[in-house]
Image (tube, rainbow, N blue to C red; front, side, top):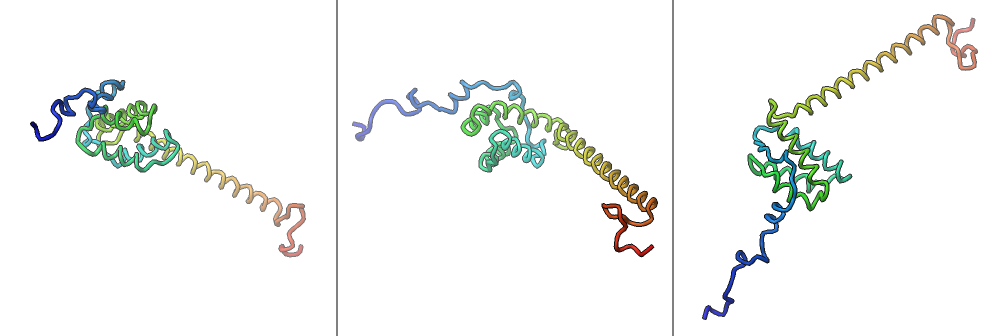
Length: 176
């Protein structure tokens, strides 16, 4: 006898106990963008991390620190992460939004890989636009302040004395 153990097939040989991860990889549909290889060593991850966090918040309407850490760890695990395996792994968290998330993440990573410094050009353009809008807003505020100062100066020049809202002179002014 064989020591009282079963004889027959092992778990690996039995079709009922196949690898669920491999089965999902075969069954799921993947975007064509995920076919491109990304070398993470060429990507500035410090720029990508806030984008991942904001995208998770946008999709789930909550800040999920566990999911954020999971995604970042999967990206930093190797120099060339497997996007299809990532999509299968993230399906439990993001459900039907997983494919869209992976497509946009991979587009950002490919763009970052191809740009100097590992920063996506779209991020640079967006930041430049924000800075320009901030400068324009500051200039509008300065112009409003200058206009208010001019009006105030004109009123002082016209009246000579400060007037209250009712049109009377202020009690703090010197008597006439």
